[in-house]
Length: 123
Image 1 (tube, rainbow, N blue to C red):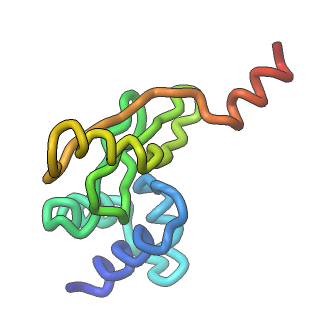
Image 2 (cartoon, helix red, strand yellow):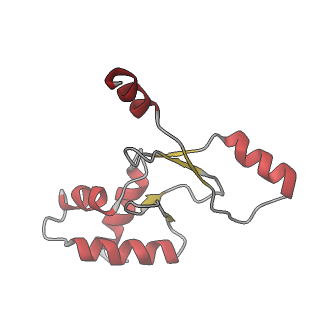
Image 3 (cartoon, rainbow, N blue to C red):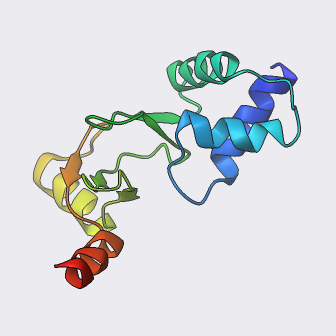
């Protein structure tokens, strides 16, 4: 694995959120200043294809990337684009109803708590 690809994989794995390519690029540039955004995109695609990270398609926004590979769903805030994991009991309920799930894509659109607070004070 190339130094750049290792740095990109580390940036995703060390992230406490679901970063997009721009966030990952900013982190990787701290160690490899000359890395291009195109290199980031190509390598993120390859890492996702290889099953080392998970791509999260976000409607009307940039894809996000996840270090957690076990099946689980996500909540996406349509206002700010924040992506968070759905509670584990939702995955448990799916598996209880359907049996063991190899994989699935479940994205729920809901306003995040920060956007709710902002809306509360601006209305």
